Image 1 (tube, rainbow, N blue to C red):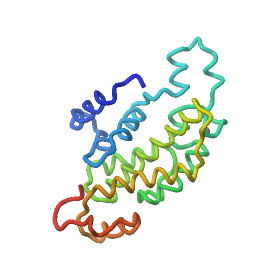
Image 2 (image 1 turned 180 degrees about the vertical axis):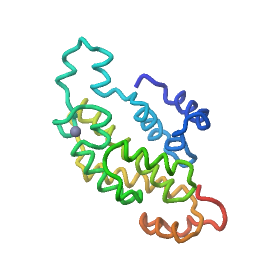
Image 3 (image 1 turned 120 degrees about the vertical axis):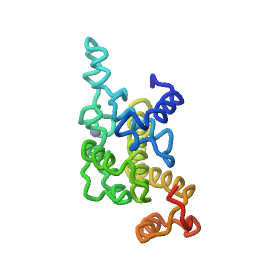
Length: 202
Ligand SMILES: [Zn+2]
């Protein structure tokens, strides 16, 4: 990527009052690499083939490249997140864990939901943001893996690594005891030792 991760991360921190949607990617419990990826995704700055064509309109080779996940659709932001058949299946498997069962696979719908909960301190909303960012991150990572190497992971493997990464993150957090939190902790099989008396989720 052409951006320096640390620089962008600093920008993210500084922009939290300036960009309306910054709370979607920048929040205390965010996983930095995932937030960075989604920041680029929202700004449509990932180096997808449709973006590369705009940068190099005379290079016809780019038109030959399509989505490396399904090998049918375009290699574009809209397709990869998550209209692609492969990415969509991943999203359908994990969205329930984010409390987003009714949110379809289009990034517009997902992002609109996230903007609505961006400033919420409820555990289920913070987890929703972590889950979406992790899903986008691992879909993009798999896209690159298949595009640039001979290796590939199955949909089930993608779901498993994404869920285990989020679960590890949740084990570093503390949760305020409430009915909502209890349901979320059961969903993720989190130990009650992560509960705190009065503090906010964090
Ligand atoms: Zn695809």
